[in-house]
Image (cartoon, rainbow, N blue to C red; front, side, top):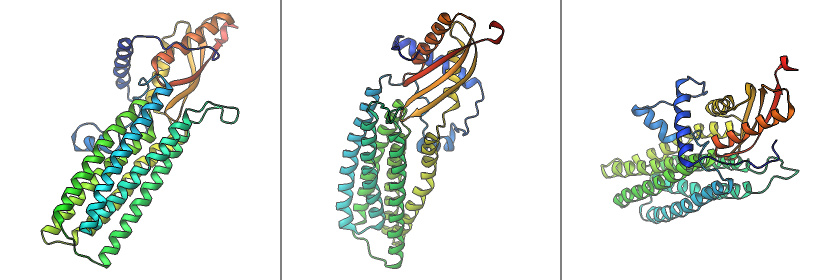
Length: 352
């Protein structure tokens, strides 16, 4: 059943229409997501900003290689934008001696470097499965995600330590106006990168790339807080600078928890219940399927793989195999980023 090639048939329009119908269908039910997505209002806005979800990616990019190429392209471009931002900020640190800006610059540099392990993971993920790694190398992406979390946490600790040191050994800040400029540069560079990484990450279903985008967005907001510190200094409140530096470090650690949960869930084979529901919904509508016994789905990097057992309404083995083949083909049409999916047909008890 799995030894044949699947046709990714269906026109683009049909694909979109199917997805819209699917989506209306799903949201009529109250699925247990294990987490709620607040919509609207300030809470919903903040949620979408810092915890964007990856689960509507199932009919995004059909071709695994194309998805991987899109991921690498996003990393390359964002790496250069962030390195440029960091260099500009580092120059301004030298002129101002601001600890909040130093904290922000260190963080931006760390965030730029997190693109490297993720880049390696995307390239590794293209390698063909072998007898040692029978599922392929896609999971390297989630390991890179954990590494990103570690690097960002480390940069938060360094920033916090620098801020505490500045409380103990205060130093005047020269040219606070330059700080405002640096903060705005940092925010702009990071926000461009965040929008780009999150969009591509959602499109290809990569939790690690979305996580990297969220970090860039966090960095953008820490850059804006540097502006607040500079305004504090101009208003004759010099201690504002290390206070902001310390707050930056604490906020990074708090917001990092959401990312740890999403990447940890991937490593534990957690899947959005909506995807399982969609797979069941697709299987229910296949001619010859009487009932669905079980459906299993898992992410391997940004690709889905899985299996299902279905009860068929025929005792003829040849016909049962045909039903299973049809079911597999329909699933591949419904999920663009589905790699291997095996449907095993079983006969209803009364038909033996």
